[in-house]
Image: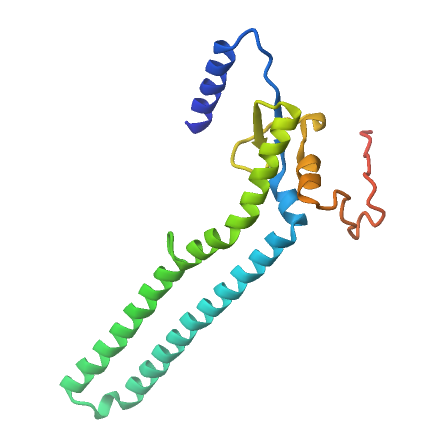
Length: 191
């Protein structure tokens, strides 16, 4: 539905300015982010927080498991009131662990907020660079190839990723991979 509305919006814009040609471009934000040290640092920080919180949750479940084993070992020696108290304590601990897990990893939880906070700086850098490139190249629209918006075909001459990377002071050369150690583009011809 969103895509249909988006295309209707683009169509309406195209009809409202028929005499003026509109210039479009796109970038690949995933490619740009992969070259940004700020982004890599933010990812590292996010991983540290996620690991710490995961360990905290895992520790809570280990404590619950110990309480359950202790209860099972002593169950035959306990009175009914003592059994209910122990079961209530275990249930409370399980509920606390679930609530903490939801608080950290749930929808708009602590991890989400931390990720939003740490990604703000790299996103702002890209946004400023995109705005500057759009003004320089007189572009009306700039799309992101890595977004949820489906781009069935993209002509490489409309790719402004390298311009944005130059504006950010990043290296635009491809990274060497084990399958392509020379960084050269390999063209495969159909048989």
